[in-house]
Image 1 (cartoon, rainbow, N blue to C red):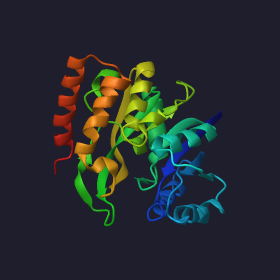
Image 2: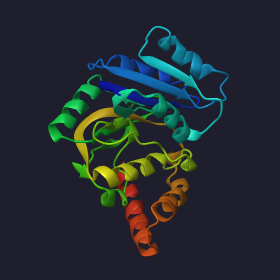
Image 3: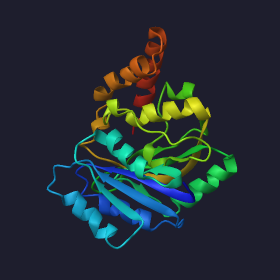
Length: 256
């Protein structure tokens, strides 16, 4: 572990169109101590995404490209990057999302102020092509706990940073593939640290791609149920209560 270093974990699947712009937002960071580990998840794009990353990695030693030999979903790709990560701090940035230039600086300052193990921020929700806001910004709560996260996931991966000096480095449950893997990750962490702290400042732009798996909430209902019932092994009445809460909150979260 290198003190002060932020390891940025970026899974990429068919990411050629947007990854360059994502990398540019990392290069613009006012906090200079970072490494960006991009894992191409065996994309069927003829190497287009890999070439886009190499354009930057060949000239920036802080950017590391790993080419996975098989497709493991976002959970598998993130685990490959986590195994290579050397930083005290672990952060996540999907290959199509955008950070403000002072994202790392402000989140680390917020973490220090709160004496927190895990912090996350509010974020904009933008069109994948035009980058115009398609929904109101999502403003996060000041605190989340394991119990509150059973009802809804308020942590968007590209906004989150945690400190491995305060909690162990955690790996993703690869059985989840690319559905709810981040949700299971935060639940696991919150069992240990108990509280995550939300920064209400809007520091990230989430590109809402039409092809995103989670864009259709109906496709997420069963994986959400699996998390509650099979992964967390909650009693049936508790699962029913929380899945109902999740449904209502999701409708409110995605209204215009």
